[in-house]
Structures are given as C-alpha cells and as structure tokens.
Length: 379
Ligand SMILES: *Cc1c(COP(=O)(O)O)cnc(C)c1O
Figure (cartoon, rainbow, N blue to C red):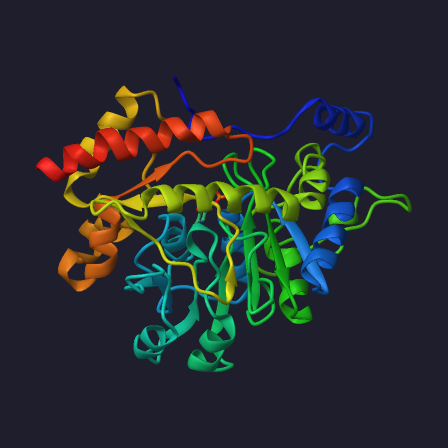
C-alpha cells in the first residue's frame, strides 16, 4: 500500500473559480484579492489584511516597512524552516537563533527576553506544527518597542486562550504554499492592527511605488507615481487568490478532521518507547499542520523503512543553523542550541491531510509500530 505524504483537497469547483478570473481584464491583484482580504479581516478580526505571493516575500516587505536592515538583530527560533531566518538575511539584518522548549518546540518568552540586546529590533516567533505560542506572554516579555512578526505558516486556524494570530503582534504572516493547510500553490498573507505599518507595507509590497500605484490602471486617466523607498514585489495575482475563499470558509471543519487524525496517531504511539511526540499546551488549539515524531539517531533508518513500505515522509526540520550557509556564516555549534539540534536531527513527519483514509493511516501506524519500533529497539 502506498500512502502519500500529502494530497491537496482542491477540486473542479476551484477550477471554475480560476476560470472566472480569466474572464476579467486584469489577471493580477484586483477584485478577487480584495474580496479575500475582506474575508481575512473578518476571520482574524483585524482592520488590515494584504495578500502576498509567499510568506517569504510578505515578510521581506514587512521588514523593509519596519526599516529593519544592516546592524539590526532579529530573534528567531532555532527550530523552524530556514525561511524564518532567511528573510532576516535578505534585508541585511542578523538572525539570532534562540533555542526552544523541549516539550512544545516553541520559543519561550523568557529565553527571547534574555537574548535581547541594544540592536534587537524584532522577534519572529514561529507557531511550529500548528501550535501557537503564548503571544500575550511574549509581548509582555519583549515590551512595546520590539516588533513581533508572527510566522503563522503552520497556524492559520490556530488559537491560544481563544485568541487568533494578529492579536498581540505588529504583523502576522501566513503561507499558502502547496502543502500548507490553506493553499493556492504559492501565496501568503499579512495581517496587522497597525495602520502606519499597513500604509508603508502597501508600498514595500509593490516595488516601493508611491501609494495608489496599484490603482494606476483604474478609470480616470493615467496617474504618475514616484518611488520614495525600496520595495520588493510581493502581491498575489487574482488567478491564485480565487482558490482561497472556499478553503477559508471550511477551515474550522477541516481542522477537526486533522485533529482526529492526530489523536489517532497519538493514541497508537503512546506506548512506544522509541517515539517521542511534541506536546500541545491545554490552552492552545493547534492547526495540526504536521505530525512530527522524534525517533532519535535512528531517524534516517526510519525514513528508509517508511519509504520501503510505501509511506511518504519528510523532515521538519533539520536545524536551520546547521545548514552550510548558516554554519559557514555564524559557525553555531549544535551544543549551543541543544534542544533544537536534538529534535531536528531526530525528527520526521508522517502523512497528515484531511483526506487520509483510516485504512491509509492504519498502514502508517502499522509501519511505525511493527517495523520501525522493533528496528530502533534493536539498535
Ligand atoms: C512554509 C514556511 C515558510 C515559507 O513559506 P513560503 O510561502 O513558501 O514563503 C516560512 N515559515 C515556515 C515555518 C514554513 O513552514
């Protein structure tokens, strides 16, 4: 039996939504995107939302809008996808990797506070695997002057103490990349409560062209534009935005399917001494984006066994600071970030998507329990 790592849930109706955009005159950001932005404002109960063509480009635009660059430090977790640190590098600032909680794998507010220097301008907490960290506590720990930019790539539908992303941060960024819970292939969004940041963000998202430039093709004749500051190009075309509304509308129901699948995995693996799971805080409702298991030094052997038994698996994530680029640049040894190093070198992710059938999941559970577990016990 073959079980893929991921299968998207889009269908023929979604093709119709794209076809509708094809019949409009302007294929990039116009009416459809504005509709989705209104939907995002409502879902997150925030005054401002902007669609972006990726989490990465949206985050670069936010960092540019905050004037973060050379000489500045931005705190990032040591357990995350490389993109979280990359966006800091891309604007010429320095990412400061901080280790994570050994149970939840999330940044701890007190560790972030301890890493603050006079150069610290921002922190990018990551709601890893779908679990939000305690954002009120993080804000209290860093104070009002350090920007908080939430990495919500895994956590669209997550809450903590009943609060959604965007409540305590300067900005929260989402990814609609192909494997994310809400997807349009490539895409993202930024939400913020800060009017000033939003006005600047609209400029840094679009080449740095003066506000209103996005509307320069509108009726009423040509309008000159100017460029007052540097920007990138991060807007989402309507062709892709058209895939989002139905997914956002059903995201809570789909989250429950993800939750059930995760609980089934958790029950099946609870007694396995070779498998460690990430903890979810009782105050958090996780978006359940990924299902990681930590199997330690036998990880690569486990990956091979999964593949031999037809199970798609991946790694989220080998420690980002140990990639060649970051190792060459900063020379951070594993012993300085021990929790992230231990977790990152020993973790793998199992298939998790709403259309995973019980039979498929049973096969994955069988391979972990009856093939991998005994193999790891022997070694
Ligand atoms: C996917 C992901 C990103 C990057 O998202 P893109 O939309 O591909 O730029 C950033 N952070 C985390 C934690 C991710 O998983």
